Length: 228
Image (cartoon, rainbow, N blue to C red; front, side, top):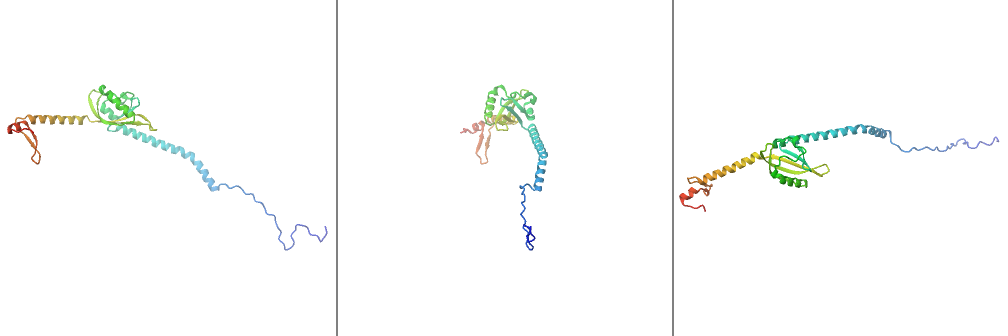
């Protein structure tokens, strides 16, 4: 190689050497450290929170069931539940008080308070309720000791969680005293009416305007009037 020849590839004095551009390897985008930490923390917390929430929900449900059971058991009205076969599945304390039978005596049996002469009527009402109808009315029943009891009964279908009719619900209010008071009042009015009409003295009743309301037979005979 001669002295006058300069090596190839070297930059001459005053010129800037050119470098080949470097190729940078691009990594695929990934979660930032903060996002990754959050995702990891959430994943780590989820298994421990889920059982706690489940336990809390279960306890709340159990508490609600206990409360409802207590309300039914201590309700002032008799509450009786029957399955589709007509057997007693619930008989609360007021039902015991009204009819005289304890719950353990009637569970699994047809309601014992229905007298034989009312059996066909009771079965017809039960069939209607199991078909989706409701019932409201006064019915005649008997207590365990054989005495009569008049109750106002409200009957409605009992449905399961899917809305399917699974039995019948009956709510009973003892109206025996009320019925007896009404009967005594009617009898008293009848006796008073008889005494008023058959009295040997003349009696009359007038309204505030002086018009006759009642006139007994003695009054008519004394004055010679007819009732018309």
